[in-house]
Image 1 (tube, rainbow, N blue to C red):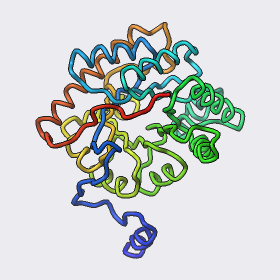
Image 2 (tube, helix red, strand yellow):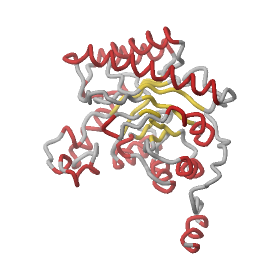
Image 3 (cartoon, rainbow, N blue to C red):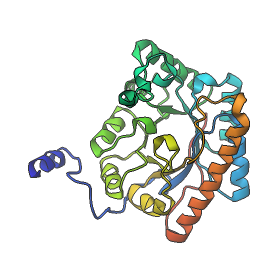
Image 4 (cartoon, rainbow, N blue to C red):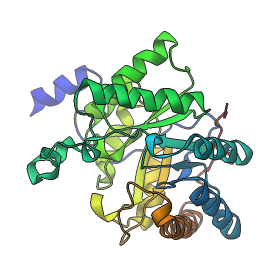
Length: 305
């Protein structure tokens, strides 16, 4: 094992998961260690519900993310979300619409085919995804959620050539979550600016990934059932210490899968959004009790166009 460890270390990667789990010295641009993300915010109504509930519970929300996709929102809905985000200084992160699970391919529905996840099938679907990106950017969105490594590579290149805004945030989905330091660095090198890691990482595994990348880490501290259903609230103070800069992401266990969303289930989506904020209040209480020194961003620090 020594030779393999040396190979990794000689190339700038951790040779082992650090058992001592050192504190991360890395920070967000404003010097903070953590921010709060509320996922599955599927439209203007659920975004307004998040803000209303956050105000009632004195919860600071820095980012909301959406899962159904840009293609499943109207221009007016996207414009409304962008304006709400701008007015309230919240990052509005929208998912790319096309994905294998929306397509006609059958392998993704088989047990052995699940690793295909939310990838894009063929060049045509890659083009469809890029159309989602172009439309979102044209409507003022500056934060895009991707789940396909090819799309990530293309978007990274388009940012470097100036075809996409240089400040565009590219967030990778939990469905392509890197499980080790090297795979996390591959995503960062391709252009990811914020990376969702698996929800079941141990603290040493998280420390190893943090040592390899500078991008903020997104971590479900409560995961939806379809990615494990873990509830790890008590571990959040240590996640922040070791993983900073970290987006503390509140999913919801024992809740239905709402993708793709729409007006037919809008009441349910709103109730789920409010409950995620309630969970965030609980987690913020944990942080205040057990890590009062942890520094949270006071605002999203995202310049909405």
